[in-house]
Image (tube, rainbow, N blue to C red; front, side, top):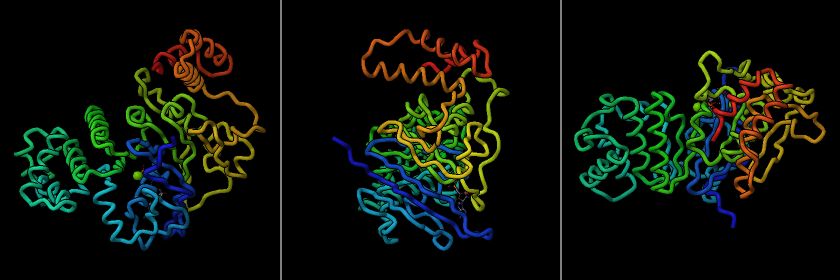
Length: 388
Ligand SMILES: Nc1ncnc2c1ncn2[C@@H]1O[C@H](COP(=O)(O)OP(=O)(O)OP(=O)(O)O)[C@@H](O)[C@H]1O
Ligand SMILES: [Mg+2]
């Protein structure tokens, strides 16, 4: 039986009025979310991750924003048609958001315990004392030590990681159906990042919350997401299960993002960066906005933007390379290594006895090495660090 989507964003188009004219920030975004599922939205700065999720909870500046097309179905109801009153209710009790900088969302002159308690009281009939007790329990749940004491402190007395935990506690105070986490770990140390992600995962399982996790860092996605949507210049350009995006990516932009993601064996000075910059959204040229940065661009990319091509039932990508008429190209070596891993994963899923993993991988790299720029040793190293 096909599970129902709790959220469906269909063909969303949003522009902003600016001094430079109309900026078409979201050009055709669709994604969906099932109950208990985590969707990661990934892409460079300005690709439209925040705008498309702020649209869900009606947090875009009304006087500057023009929602041109699309629908946002939450349990089947279009939030774009909801009244302010309805949206306020949804925001508080059904869809919660946490942001990169918790300081902007916390009240500096109210104790953190009271802020969480207020979030609880807004959606229950609990009195202040009971709400505060529950707030302290939530603080314990997000692993704030001495919660009973810390509840009486103010946000500035907490570190960045601790403030993010308070935001998570506040978000959970109303047991939301969906938690939207917009770069919640970007400002934090790597070890704190990892713990916050674990915490979101644990709480998600406990409350059966669906999560939209926004990040520009594909590296954190593998530990978080069931599915991934990659955005570029206001569009979702590739979407699939986490395995499909990590081990069978089809879009050259996704290839670039993966190659730009540090792994255990990458040294800082070797890290690849995608050449060039994202386009100016106020002045988009015809064709695929990624074409000027795309080493695999075809002639048609400069003329006509590619549609979404279906790869599997769960995987699609907007690249002309998937059109039957396109020339067959050889992806970068690291990506070929990932394809080998994907085949292996698929074989394992089907219970096939798969050929020895290393043998297959090395054979793939021998072929790839004749075409690719890297040495055979690099290729074997690539397989080792990609191994799952
Ligand atoms: N209020 C606004 N007025 C005009 N343009 C805006 C406004 N808000 C966002 N934009 C534009 O919309 C586009 C998408 O922005 P968005 O904030 O969604 O990017 P993002 O993917 O979240 O990036 P980041 O990783 O930096 O957070 C950008 O080109 C941005 O300049
Ligand atoms: Mg953003």
